[in-house]
Length: 417
Image (cartoon, rainbow, N blue to C red; front, side, top):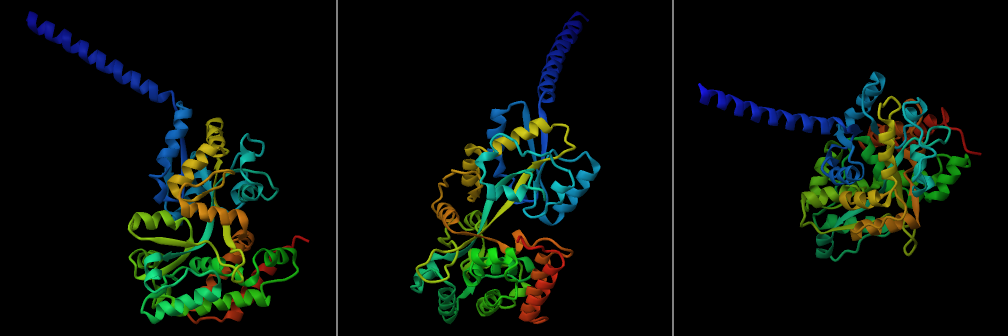
């Protein structure tokens, strides 16, 4: 009995130590503030680890819980979360939709320290309709032409610098039974993206955009009509039944070497490198109007982050906003994501990302239909995308694309002058 009593005493002592340890760990966790951060990019989850670790090293009492959702479900999830008042502390904002800012769902950061490190033109994507800043821009997307260097070398081809050269290269590739351009038309936005990248070198880039916004011209301008005709003509160089294949199928054609080019945003670079590390990828950062002139690269801010007004931890969440404006954050972001940071002064280490960033600095032009014509009901952007798709499947004409797009604009757009 005596031995049993000793055993029970020792057992009680060990249980007490274990409970104290658990209590201490629980106490340590409970002393930290956990911030929920929503995003629509599930593919970015692993890349955020280094960013979150760097932030938590600076602020050990704050934890970031990154919760990404499917892009197609994200808007509804955010709407429901904001309506419930018990959702995330930080959300990723769409680049053109100002409704969240205008509805008072976010905290103004207009006077936040560090915001001066973000160029004014990038901050516009996170402003409300009155010009007040409600978020920190994450990245600057750029429209580019990816090309397979091995295929180009095999057929002794130079990367195109103009639309005429793009057509000539595509003709030579097709003659050699190589699919020139891996393009999907299954979703209208992919066709609008194609136009957004190719179009500026035809309609005149910023000069046309300025005239359009001032009300001095409209979408029936001959140069804009020509830009639509040009992408229609490129159809000869797309995969068979390209309207029926998905973007994933198109990307697969490119990174498996079955297609020589793929036209989309520079954010695809990391994905291609992950899918086929041996693929020797070249990048054409925009096309020039004429041989020898500077290329025009289509740019747009993609995804700012803002603090939710109903958050119980607004002060802690604003610390993450401040961290997003630092060069440390920008450097981690551009190196982890292989994309151009919105923070001024960040130098990408990757030579291809650096090349894109340099053209972005020298001669950027906006993704016109996305940045300036995403209003209306349905939006002009949606009208443009849907009619483009209709044109490619033969259900409507080029003239109808122009007519319906301009009709949509006339219902809501007010020129700046």
